[in-house]
Image 1 (spheres, rainbow, N blue to C red):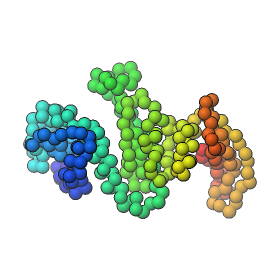
Image 2: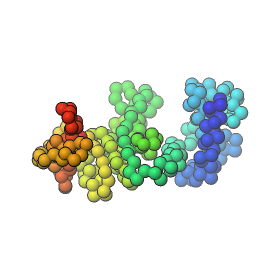
Image 3: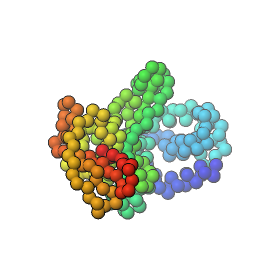
Image 4: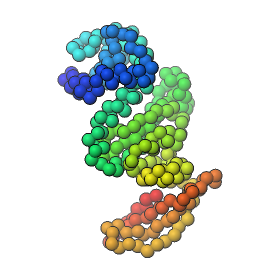
Length: 262
């Protein structure tokens, strides 16, 4: 219980009621309840997550032992949870992360953002609008993760069947950073856009990429030397980069092992 109370106090110190009201107005949700408000619902989600309550019925009894929680019956919990839109919690999450990252953003000129997705599946009966495969439904979270601060920077959601590349435009934009992505987010037009916007990026190439190779001399004044530098034209049968992208292969001095970075 001490851990829950500490989180309640931390949350109140980070995000004030005025900011919560502004987000509610942004997502066009009115909060008519006087007793069990959105703030109380948020505190309930924190407590139930930390203490691993099994459901609304189980929570009804356990909320009575928490002095910082408003005790209500399970039907009120269920109704309130279904009323408050998911977009509210998403915007609140981004606001919270923005405040946590302020000190890091002041210090770093070029943070490293790693982007990837994870798929969560349930029975198709629970999410019939998000059919995935067989008897499963699923949703996917796409996360832009700050490698230095070890905190998420941005989170976007989609159904599980939506391809990663369709969400990349929402994640690989705006920030002055080094973007690191797997091939699921690889799209040649996007690489051109990132290059035009002077963004740095490391994206794993698709298996069907065609690369033209040109060997240049090694530079021995660096700890790492170029073994081979390739100016590659990436093709997929339909599209081709407007400008060649550099693909380099490095090796250490006095070592036979080398790794490729594309």
